[in-house]
Length: 107
Image (cartoon, rainbow, N blue to C red):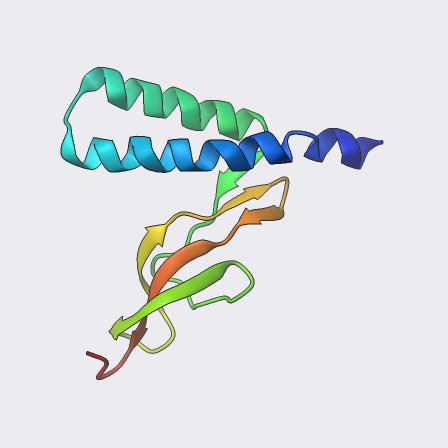
């Protein structure tokens, strides 16, 4: 029963991630205090439900948490850039992070 309770919101959360992505993309182009506050509140609400972003930049590539979408010049097998964030719910991966992974000499 506890597991059912913990993961009951999984489908709804997965539907919210594209909304969070859109807000984050807009915030990169628009400097608005109200937008920043809305994003902060949305992220706080997700955290309260047990959702956390997967930290990837500067870490070794992990295929269980990440999807490599591009190989770029950089330190071998290290994540250089996050393209799309990944999320966990109480430790369970809901969406893997899409990342660019380094390889020496890659172009």
